[in-house]
Image (cartoon, rainbow, N blue to C red; front, side, top):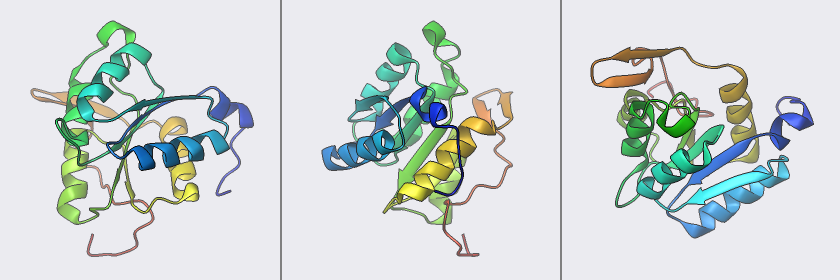
Length: 166
């Protein structure tokens, strides 16, 4: 394991997985359960993810980028703009997983308020590191007209990708 988080750390987490592929949802749920996460909520698109965010108030969201009818980028933007909707935390860490690791995709995710960007195929160690970092090292949030989320000036790269061109 890349770090040694307290086992209770994962047992207490409530994670919302938003992914249109049933197979990928099952894989993410299995990875999370192997880490000790006992509360995994699943949604098949951004619209259902937004509803689940308000209903279940997760500690962290893991979302795909490309989905229909609402993608992970728009869902992230709406979560950040939601305010404290019925007790849900608009500052919740949001990890985006995507096979599109080109700079423009990562920048777009950052500009929508994504906390971290994880490349597909996703490894258990990258997911583990991202969850520990997102929950234990909160990012400073800014609020301007039309935007609420992590500073759009911060650097964000696809985690685990070493290409300097990104």
